[in-house]
Length: 93
Image (cartoon, rainbow, N blue to C red; front, side, top):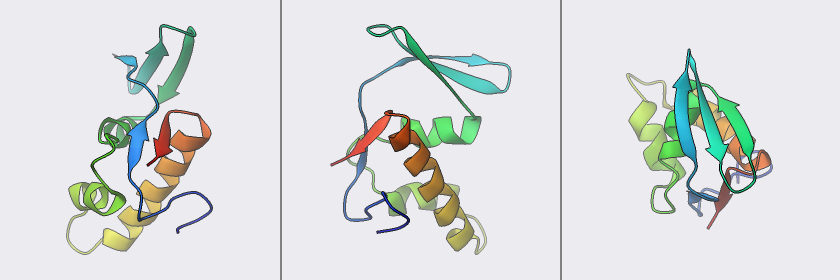
């Protein structure tokens, strides 16, 4: 377990599919059922897209890692996943 809520044995999955639009440099996720909206940065959006319940933390880190920066990327991705979970956008299965 990294931090308080990222369990490397589990996989992140979106709580529900949300409509999204790019607005300037940010992505706006919209829940049509609750009328809630979430504004997230492009990297967080790319991480959220990969939260399909099949893709684990290590694979997500592999997508973003280049030339030996894996530890830094893993820490950043873990933080993004924790934030997505705190905001109710993903859960772990």
